[in-house]
Amino acid sequence: MNAVLIGINSKYIHTALGLRYVGEYAKSQGHNITLIEETINSQPLAVLEKIMDHKAEVYAFSVHIWNKPFVFKIIRMLKKLRPESSIVLGGPEVAFDVEKIFAELPVCDYIIEGEGEIVFSELLDSLENGGDVPKHIAYVNNGKVELNGGTTVIDDMSILPFPYPDLDKVLAEHRIVYYEATRGCPFNCSYCLSGITKSVRKRPLDLVLRDMDRFIKAGAKLVKFVDRTYNLDERYFLPMLEYLAAQDTDATFHLEIKADALSEKVMQFLDNVPKHRFQMEIGIQSTNPPTLRAINRVDNWEKLSSNVKRLLSYNNMHIHVDLIAGLPYETLKEFAKSFDDVYGLGADMLQLGFLKVLPGTQMRQEEEMHGLKYMDETPYEILATDCVPYEDMQFLKRLENIFDQTGNAGCFKHILASMIKHSNMKPFEFYTDLTNWWVAKGFYPQSHNAKGTAEILALYIKEKFAEKQELLLEILRFDVFTNIPGWEPNWLSWQSQEIFDKTSEFWRNESEAKKYVANYKFSSWRTIHKNYPIERFAYHPETEMPGEFYFLLDNTADAKIISLVL
Image 1: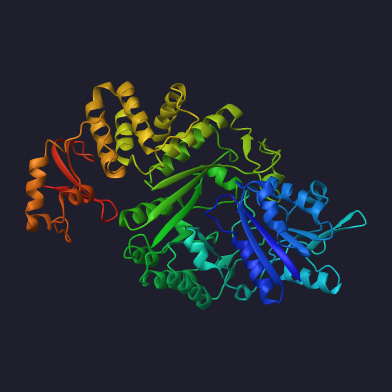
Image 2: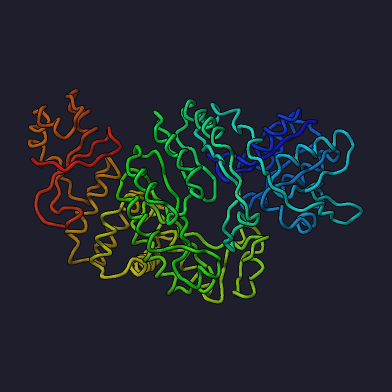
């Protein structure tokens, strides 16, 4: 049986992992499968043309909140041109409300309910041989939707094939490699679909490590595990971490973890892993106890916060934490406290998301209880609740936009910390003031790169911190020097020419220079100034102590900052 699988990703760098598993399993069962991956930014007619180049009996689409309108538009056109072919849908956006999907898209023939590797292959067998529609595939019979067994899962994860037969091409195109070691989640967060099965299934460890070897050998730079909670079973995940830490590779492995479930043994191990080998994403969502109870989350905040701070102190991995706005029983005041609590951890990134009231979730069933008003169509994002009116929610959207360009940009760590300190405000109060000022100045909603954001922050400093602007502009200059290499705007007081004689003398003394840059060897002054710029500052960026402070930026070693004595 010939089938074309179509994955419409949200960005070019993404890969359609679920569809790849489905396609590779079907190939292993003797079917002829073609995979097409495009994005929601592609032109619909161009995608249609690409699909029409492949004549097949079956066209299958993976449907998610980010691609549903695009996919449905393509399907309506495709069915007019290939009415004899079957249209199959799968994915979380269609699996839990099939009657509604058939009503929205009558040209659809089949909907896979749940994990599709086995049942899709069985459907292809059935269509080829004239058998009955397999269980767990919904269809319309004489105008009536047949649920046909409900949702299904893959119990034996060892049957899943390696999903990247085109791995070299994927890596050459600089796309993200996603991977599943486990499926399911034992938790029952009310806004999420992952815990509906109440079970966690593991791929055998030896097969996972074999797959990791393939990624490493091919030169993958980033592998993102999509496991909902990577660290559920220490006997399973710790050997995996130990194996990955021991490999000779530049790859980074991204893991979603529950931080308060990390044992002392794991914490001690992570203290000594190679830098950038792992990056951790930690979903906190809220620190408000009534909210956590309402969404069925049980977190030990004391242990969670202690573990996150300890992981950050290791300085060997990127730590990303999440908050969700619009959850039950959390007013703007309670959300501000959650923000302050989580911001205080000092993570490398704090992602502020907004509740999605997904079909099939407990949250959707409780929408009236919590006064949830949300988008009827994808992505079902919250507009207002009985605790957060629309005006407050829109303010949070503005704050998110501005926070992403400042706090999450990774370029302004020192200046933001100093401004919060000198404002005598808590973090959320400070970002509220910055947001209101930013909007009033007309800098919202457009996006600004790091250089543009630095200019905006300089203006904010001059207007809001007139008495401290000499200090704060110097700290901003340090952040610009260390995070936007080679950019020296004339509105900041650069010292490189004034200290030229000192720096030249320093570089001529090779033994002295090697105390700071072990592999230093003079080549040319142009190379020295490009790779190892030195700058003088009138205040220390962390202590704010006045004086003469020299810093060297080693651009050959991951932008390493070195304090000099000259």
